[in-house]
Image 1 (cartoon, helix red, strand yellow):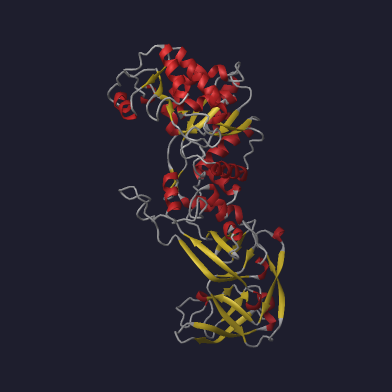
Image 2: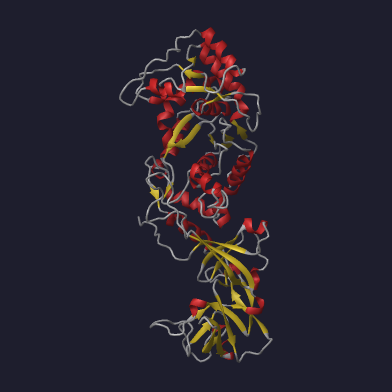
Amino acid sequence: MENESKNFIEQFIDQDIKEGHCRTVRTRFPPEPNGCLHIGHAKSILLNYGLAQKYGGTFNLRFDDTNPTKEKTEFVEAIEEDIRWLGADWEDRMFFASDYFDKMYEAAVTLIKKGKAYVSDLSAEQIREYRGTLTEAGKEDPYSSRSIEENLSLFSDMRDGKFADGEKVLRAKIDMASSNMNMRDPVLYRVAHMEHHRTGAKWCIYPMYDFAHPLEDAIEGITHSICTLEFEDHRPLYDWVIREVGAQMTPNPDEMPPRQIEFAKLYLTNVVTGKRYIKRLVEEGIVDGWDDPRLVSIAALRRRGFTPESLKLFVELCGISKANSSVDYAMLEYCIREDLKLKKSRMMAVLDPVKVIIDNYPEGETEYLEVTNNLENERLGSRTVPFSREVYIEREDFMEEPPKKYFRMFPGNEVRLMNAYFVTCNSFVKDENGVVTEIHCTYDPKSRGGNSPDGRKVKGTIHWVSVPHAIKAEIRLYENIVDEEKGVYNEDGSLNLNPNSLTVLRDCVVEQNLADAKAYDSFQFVRQGFFCVDAKAEKESEGLVFNRIVSLKSSFKLPTT
């Protein structure tokens, strides 16, 4: 009964502990520093860190920097920031694959001495041909019969830079007839004359991921190597490397070697997560960086206004399984609404303002009205909001000739200005283009606070911002960056971009209390949704800019159990 509430990974760990194979659970998150992390990585981070926390173990951050072609220090720093923001703490255990290049080289030499690795002159294309297919066995590499001495000499020459890129590789000698393609003498090292962001020009040969990763886990004493499902077919090779050269590297030889366990990736519908596509969007100026709020990179979600708590809730709702599936983006939006609705004050902002003049209100007078910050959470208290003779309302809250059941402002109708007064529309002014520029009203002084003085009912309630106290703001509204009706990709692999993914409103006004809002501060704007101060705009001194995190309406409902 105890295991029924635990996911399959926790059940594996429980068994390893029970059988005495594991005393301290050690997990890791191993990103490659060639781009920013996305929502799928958040699942892996929180899973690995959560397991370490649950079992009183340790969690490592390790950068898998074995491919210097695309790796940059700026991505290392961005990934560190993302993981800290999510709340995962690696303490003093931040490592790099490049920390172990010397040990990896020694491990490769050991394989050669055991007759388990050889230097091949085949090109990458020839290696693919010799590898065979899913239905046909591979052919033996003609260089697999080289002597141990010759292989040691050639491998040393590879390290010393005596061969050009692609001229030679080191391959494991396993089984070219294996039913698992990954076991058909995989490449362990390739020649690559490239500057590494940490080791410089020290190395001109670099280990392949399938060789480096198990060795890194072994060296760090990782007990459970949690990875995504596409590595399931690589597990026999992972175990082979551990068995042949990794086991003796572990700092805990009396415990079990690292165990690889695979789980299903997190797929969100109609979003772009591929680094290649995001890089293209950035380079072509379609988005303003890896943190553009239309993306689902962790940096983009943070900039848009998502919280660590909302992502944790999202990951919990998705669960951990062995079966691939897709999750609707609406569930992610549900999670941020759930997290913010009791935390944030309801502020007044007008996105498309039109001026209302209250003709019988004293000119030059300002009064301050007390407004409850959040009706659902009294602990957020209240604030005072200035009110004056002229206020802005949303243009859509006035109609010259309204349809039936329209309860907002129109000539002759009385409405409530939220938390302020009852006002009755008497007239309006248009410009030469027929656009309404002013609306003239009268107010009932006895209805202060928006309360009826005589019990009369008013159906329409409108939010507003005092004109002399209004703070100008730019507000950015977002839709999915891809056209949801057409899907993410065209037949040629290009993206179906949504031309309306970003709408910028530059003539908005917000209430005076938002004047000192800082980067990442978030609020609920009455009737409009949740909004966050844009961090990049603040740094670039563009004035007050808000990103809409999410609207108030939700199409997602939690499944009933």
